[in-house]
Image (cartoon, rainbow, N blue to C red; front, side, top):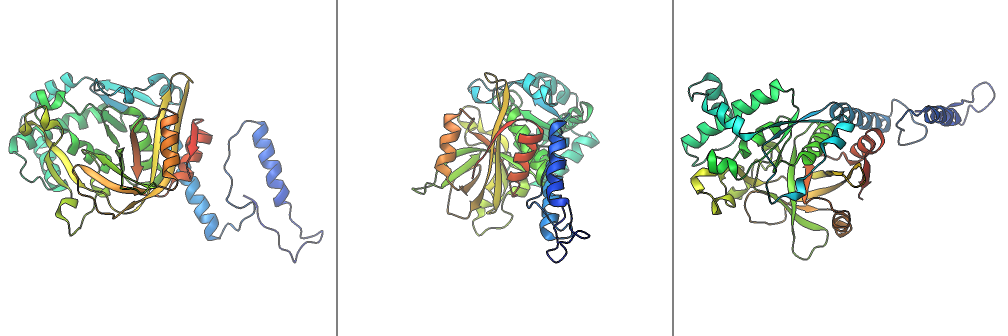
Length: 373
């Protein structure tokens, strides 16, 4: 920061040295390898709204960097066989201070079996689930399984000092345990402990970065479909574990309101009654920031892209958690994703924090970032 000069006080006694002094300060910081952030204008009044906005952006940068350095991510289960796209490098993440703690699903199932349904913690978790989302026609046995599973996962998160997680959500859990974990993951994400499906650890990191920047929950979705012939619009979707606060709370269309359901996709391969726990609903129409992080083993680098767009109210009838997005120069972004081999998953957050996230990850974390505009 540098104070502005007063054009009526430019004589020897009053003229300031902030304008060029800021350059000298930056030069010295650069010489010593110290990273720093600049205000949006070279000189600013520290009592102005613009400076206050800059300070808020810098606070976002600090929260992201401080939250990711020494972050611990839980990796529950194994990568789905068909999802090579969620491969990642633990070593590259560890190099920047992000640790990954693993746990096998068989360990979870064993711990769940030792929990009685009338355990006070299980009952409390069951109450939490019912208060969190309308459970619809969900069978009591499915809700009981979710509650016991949730207690075990909560214990693991606390005991291992984990801030976020990525979970194998299909199909082992449905086949051998009889529910999907989507609602429990949604609850964690809604409490700013981001939880990504399909063991997408890099997606979890992006979710958590956005949550740290905004103080609001993040969701993991697919860039999934075009929207008619509009080149700047598309459909985002997951099946879903989206946090409750991103969904519409009120709508004339009942299908837009979040509701626990059985899983329309997985019920094609396992019995439908074993797939309860997904949350169906439409995402609110709001501005949003999107972010994808990836570990590039060939380059030995962590890379990513970030940008902003808007979720719209354009008509759409489908299933899962979904919304219509409008992104400036969307076709250019899609080409960038494909040309650089990025995953189809993307993390979104109902905020406008792309600039702060770009600075935090690119400048301070040292990752190779592309800011799409």
